[in-house]
Length: 226
Image 1 (cartoon, rainbow, N blue to C red):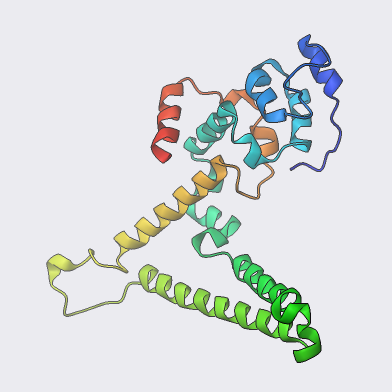
Image 2 (cartoon, rainbow, N blue to C red):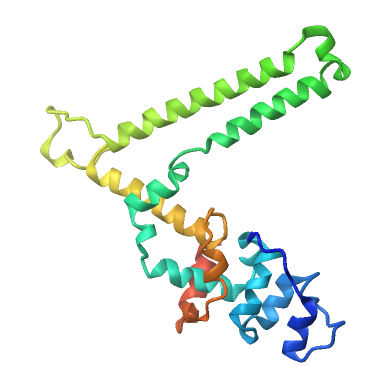
């Protein structure tokens, strides 16, 4: 969400010639309001909605989803594999923050639930200890998963393999390419649905130059994905 906090609901309604008690309200129900009036507002007013909505919330507006789809289909440099891996490396593996969240919950459970919330009096730093154990377990799972992925990305030479089997098993260039394609598809999907940390949403979502002509193709893409 943008850091800008200014939002003038009256100006939005006055610009459209709507009554000040119009329903849906642009301030109280911005997503239904945008669904109805997005095309009728200029970018300088639309930018205000970045301060009261998130990219993920705006995904519910079909026109905004289509703009993101068209941008992704244009194959921007940010969606090329090296650049995407550098910008969003955690999308190639389970995010570490999940393990940290599990550790926090484990610590919170020990301190507030275990032994009626009196665990500190019985075992001192039990919560911290359990939290540390949980995070260490998660990190070990990450290390194992990473080793497995490296086995796929870095093929081992097996001189005893039959010629017809070369290039067909895990760890071959074909499988590495498949993993790259899977990663890039994950990036595109998360981008379209507003899950990436990227400030481009606050300009792209309001840019009607990305309104495509082939609406049916865009809708089919979303239907297939669902």
